[in-house]
Length: 143
Image (tube, rainbow, N blue to C red; front, side):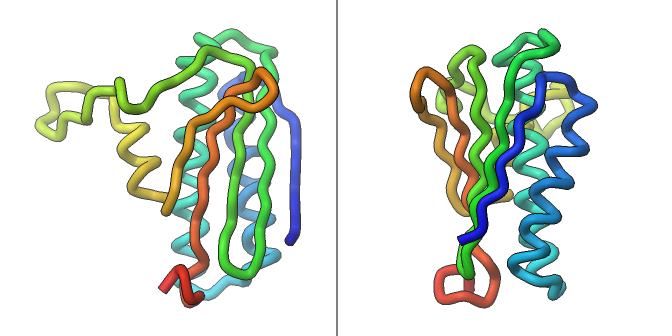
């Protein structure tokens, strides 16, 4: 299993580096067939939404706070853990998105859930951790 870990701070301009970290790690380990690239794109979208939610909502846009992104990849799955010290988040308390155009926000949790195969919100050693799991297409578990 390949593992890639990197520390960031809570500024939105770091999202591009987080996306690149995940994309590069997954492409190195999985390859670049069309199906694999589509799966990687969906995982990257979930990482972007999760990390931006941490910055905006858990850290309330306070710059300089720690965010760690850890990517673990094997032949069948890619798992990304986003750890932070900000406010806890309960996705079940988030109202569902409104698709009628009446709200401009509120789509992050929905997009994350649609983009990955598993998402968990937990605590680990005093930190909040978002765990995103994407199954590799063409494997026994990823169809």
